[in-house]
Image (cartoon, rainbow, N blue to C red):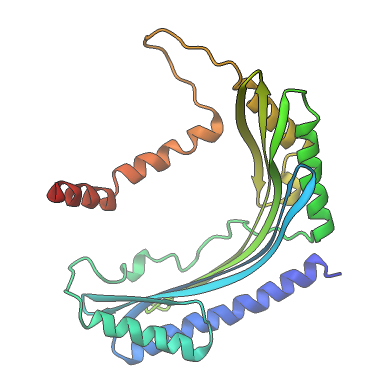
Length: 279
C-alpha cells in the first residue's frame, strides 16, 4: 500500500510537470508576439457513497485542464485543453491566438501590472496528505449513515452518506515571469436522511469538511446531526405576520455573501438588460 509520503512525492512530480506545461504555453505565446497568462489544475481523488447501509458507488477521479488567455495588444483570446501533451498545448495556444486576432480591442484587456503580482506568494498551508484506502472510506460512510438511521425511530429512510477525498495541484504563470503553484487537499463526510411522522416526510443533511483528515468531525456527529435536523423539520408551525430578528444557521449564513455577489456581478446585470430588451 502506498504511504502518504509516496503520494506526496508523486504529486510533487506532477506539479513540476504542470509547471513545465505552463512555461511551455507562455513561451509559445510570446514567440508569436503575444503576452499570456496560463492556469492549469489537476485533481485526483476518491468518492464513496452508501445508501441504506449498502455501498452504492466507489469512484476514482483524475482530471486536469489547462486554460490560456493571450493578448495581442488589447485583443484577447481564450482556449483550453484537457489534453496536457505538448502538441495539444501548442494547439490550444494557437487557437487562442487565432481568436484574439478576430476580437475587438478592449481597453481593460491585458495582464495586471507586474508590480501587483504576488511573486512571493505565501504558503497558505493547504495540503495535508493522508492515505485512506477504499475499505476505510466505505467504513466511514457506513458509520455515518448507521449513526443517523439508529438515532431515532422517526428517521424512516436515507438519501445516503458519502466520504470524499481529493488532492489538487494548481499552477499559474504569465508573461511577467511569474510561475506559482501549490498543492491542496480536501476531505469531507456527509449524510442526508428522511424523517417521518403520520403522513409527513422531511429531509435534511449534515456534513463536515476540512483540508486535514484529523480535523473532520466524527461520523457519529455527522449522522446524528443529520437526523436531528431532519426531525426538527417535522410538524412546522405558522407564525403571525410580524417584524422579528432572523438568525441564520451557520451553513446557510456562509452562502449569503455568495448570493449577494452573484446578484451584483456584471453577468447578472447583462442578463437583466438582455431580458429587458427581449421583453
